Length: 480
Image (tube, rainbow, N blue to C red; front, side, top):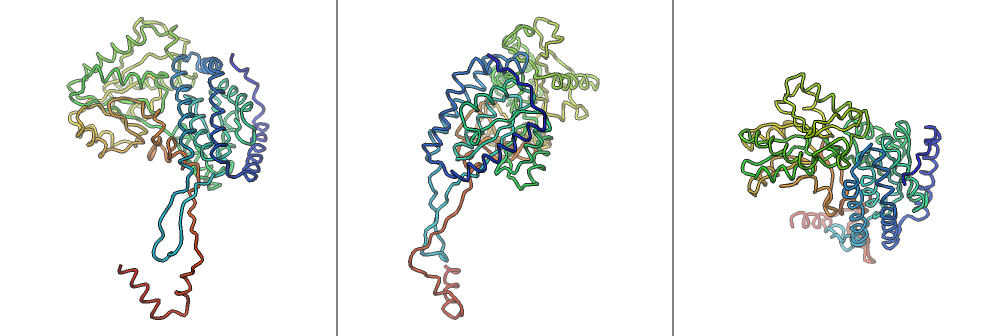
């Protein structure tokens, strides 16, 4: 059953509550600054029944927030990924917590050195609307594995999911350990201005700049998971049917409302028509109808719907060829559903060419040679993901070594995000920092170097007044 949306308190009341929780978490952390591995694993494992025992409620809440959200997409992209993350973090955190042995230099002998991984304190997580459950749980797991207290700010665009998470987290954790905050834009601004020990934001590049400015006032370190226009390069000899099938998984999931969804296709110029025909056939097979099809997810809200349709209007006016795939020619007015649409003959004056699409629209850009495709990617801001389809391993290495992106997926799309054991994060305009894997644990930990000296004090031999013995010692070690 969908959680009742409580009327959000006034912005100021929410801000006052948020500040009270922050102070309570700071005090609780000072009282218990280093939970052991068993405690951390127990906290993480509490999340599993919170998710699975309420699966129908999560599906209903997300469906209500989107207008229509495919239930199986919620199970796959929100529930399964979160549960896998729970198992992964609970299994590996003991290994990550172990001090790392290091070696002393000549000047520090005799002594021992090691690195302790200490919890930071209170971590803030700002969650976007496109996968609000998974993108709350994922960074929460890394922060808990590192031993922190956590505050989560949910998106105002998914109020039912936010209300449900606030309710269930409240039943699962004490408020001074993990808490969820809901509210409108002014609450989000106040949240980002709190002096967290670390702040993770997932969202647009433009908002990420505001988050970083607010955090800078407190010298709060930030992890920014942004986005950008993720390219998909199809190799000259890659089977088109296979490429289209794999690209469709990444583009059609959640109607393209995914930060790592393919944004544009770089296609060999002699195969563009082949791609268009294969794409139309694939999408038609997946979605023979649209309006009343429960598998076809709606655009989240009117603002995003108007943004996307505005891109198409602008592209048409400026000479683009627009191919909508609406197999049953349905009238979709009032449904907030947009057909999967290809846009060809694109130029840089079109808004769709410069902005991240974040929806079921996709550009098709022809290229002559692989290096031309690489130049096209490198002429633009560095994306969060890059996809390359080619069975030729040498070509794959060439693309890897000559492009920059947050991550790469070869011969598939978006599946790299679900790999718990490797870092996820952007580069340049697509973000900074990482979570997932051991890198996530390190993001939310202070790697504290420790030097321990024994009973023998070699330093006494190098105290002033300095003489020939000191000079000989220095030269001996420098010339060694």
